[in-house]
Length: 365
Image 1 (tube, rainbow, N blue to C red):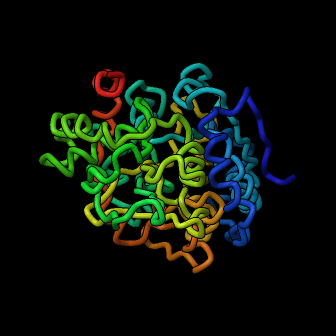
Image 2: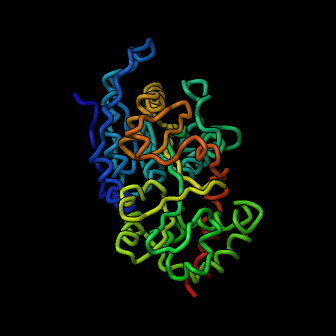
Image 3: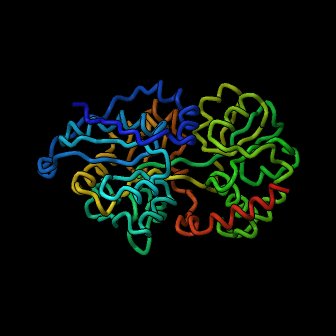
């Protein structure tokens, strides 16, 4: 028994495959061993059976294959990681009772809870709850209840070719510099990466990330600088590598493999948008004790290090110190974690359709 069963429910989503292309080199170079199985506690001795987790595939599936066996060794509970062809929100809704865990991002985490698909997290059962990044926790909280437990996060950054840009980029406002005309690639809406740029515009030219009117007005002014709107995570990296684009706004860690290709990576001091990787517990789970045990396992320091190494992602547990070999893959340090923007994922989910329409009015001209 290796504690890992893969249950594909269809073709892996294209965005996950794109992430695999971007970060596959980091996975291949993973050098941190799987976390040592902790001693069994009295609670662990009561656990049995299996848990089935809905997840995204790609780099995340690879990382789960690294970390999940340690949980089985410690508890005897098998982990079935189910790679889905659609959104985790959709499969939780369509398959009540099948899943014990759901890997979610900000929007799907709060939406699943609001739809009654997932249960409020009992934070008294989360061993390292007080060490979790408070911005991540607040963002996943709905009406005073935690909808999902943050496990890790990735921060948006500015990647640019220093040999193609003749000035130093330090902050979000620099993207509007006329010297960057026709040189920037950003993600298209409704993907969160594009709407994060709108938030950066609101922060740079308005009264904060929620000054959406100022943000969209600034996006109109940014349009001359936009070379392309990308659809998946591999495109901006390929554009930078080929020189098709000189600047890309994407997740900061995606640029690490291109550091030797004159690519500079900037996470502005004024903060940044981010995406969270969190775990929710479906209301219909048949093994809630094992679900909580797996969350606690994922938040242990050793597991957080291994997860960060395997997925090139920052730990949500602020008490974790990454060793040098893992730190080289993760750009989010203590200061970055403390300056994450307070994103309201409930409002984000409710507004995304309207924001996308506004976006299309700007970029379809």
